[in-house]
Image (cartoon, rainbow, N blue to C red):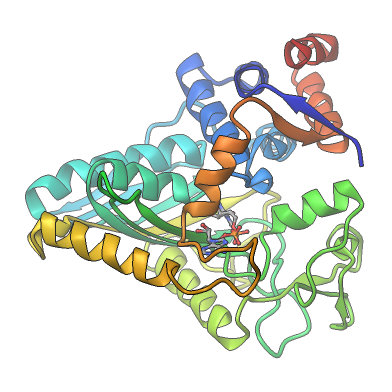
Length: 358
Ligand code: NAD
């Protein structure tokens, strides 16, 4: 499938134009566009500008609210509970994370659930925000508001969604931050969407069809009756996904995937977030030494394939950001869908094409 190479800055400006046409103030459009393009730069096209058509749909059905500020609904020392009011997750999630970082400076640890965010995007963004502040974090997120996508282990139909988890530790001069950021499904739903748009097969074992049979055809997720994604690591990934429901959905005061809650044709993320200051546990110099030594130790394992060395979580994204610094490949079908979404919001398609051609 054909793709076009777009300069990151041109892609940011095109995304901003669409977001502003959707009603966002320039500051909001900038934060969301930066988040989406950073996801593309990081190699996660599933959570990049390809999400704009989905955002246009939820803007149009009134479930995504522009220009929201996160609300602190409970403030109890080391517990800060937030409500995103269905604002852009990239904005309200960032605000909640910033508030948790600030409180953590005095309390040493903060438990900060944030409920009712429209799509938070790449959860690693919040782990990076915390790591950049020299702190550490854990994030358990559930995804509701639309039909389920992932089948429970041993099940044959979808019951919940791709419930991501992110764990982050700050780095040092010697070692960049360690950041594990992953869906609990074998592949993220957006990766199946991109594979479908590219006419490619999904990885072995990542999908079942509507009868519960294994398949590699990502199209099973995009036609009715729909198939489902599977959990990573069989019962283990499934177990973590259940905890994303219980921590992210239930303990945030949001909602879980059980059917008493409506499916409104939207994307709701509820995030259970813990931020802590490593300095309260071990001396910074000892932590930095141990981290660098541990990373060096695991990376010294001889590679099974000569051109596939051992990495640590966060490395692939760093490599991708270097590789894509000048040009991000966007597949032609995704670009067509982005332009069509922009047009529905009143943006001239020729203007968007001209922006990215420069
Ligand atoms: P992935 O499988 O590409 O990577 C998962 C993690 O593994 C990353 O931290 C990566 O650095 C690490 N990794 C990859 N290869 C590695 C290697 N060889 N050695 C060591 N570590 C390695 O990610 P994914 O599961 O497809 O998730 C993609 C994105 O989707 C994430 O940013 C996630 O937050 C996002 N997501 C968001 C939602 C939502 O509702 N907002 C839902 C699901 C996923």
